[in-house]
Image (cartoon, protein in one colour):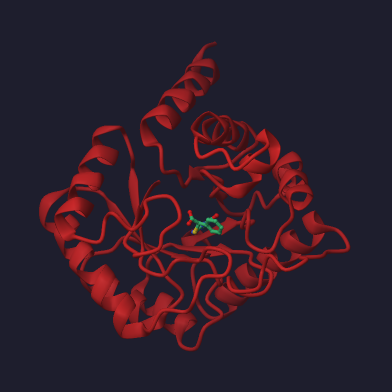
Length: 258
Ligand code: 7PM
């Protein structure tokens, strides 16, 4: 899953995809590198990020959904928590919903249901603005797993087919380095009922591990993606598609050999 941030303040792209043609160029690069899904995010969910209005998010995201649908053959994922963005995006041909708030916002559950699209339910403690202010858990693995199972059941109770549901522990969303490392260490204990999606790419935990605010976190991100897939992840959400595809090709070759 290749990341396409269409936000002016996205932490890794510096908002350089503000224009449509730059976004299309980036999609072309990611698909040529082997991405199977393009994840479009119109609301930066970085720590401390401000909320984005519904109209602003629609204005950022819908032209890109249409642009991709017209030019490419790929699965378009909507990285959004807003019901209106889910509805509009599904109508324009999006193939998946990726909600960091696990359909908690008003109308989101109904919009996801109505779309009949696959939905990724992610765990976040708090909200982006404050989630990194001293996040705390009794047992982060148990609590995140419990949350994901509850949200999965809520979706099924609302009428969603279990086969539509993808789960994600939400690295970096209300977690310290220790919390992130525990989730990674125990990833194989997460739900085998639903596929796992993991988003670790270029996140702060790597700067914490590597020391300093190293801007280049590519090798660390690729290594973590490989670790996650080795431990059962089915989808990895990444900025650096080419090196990640290479690492996963090595893993697949090992898995395929008799
Ligand atoms: C902190 C830094 C928080 C970077 C969030 C980010 C995920 C996502 C994002 C994830 C799923 C960023 C991310 N992260 N969706 N959207 N899982 N499903 O790359 O981990 O900006 S935003």
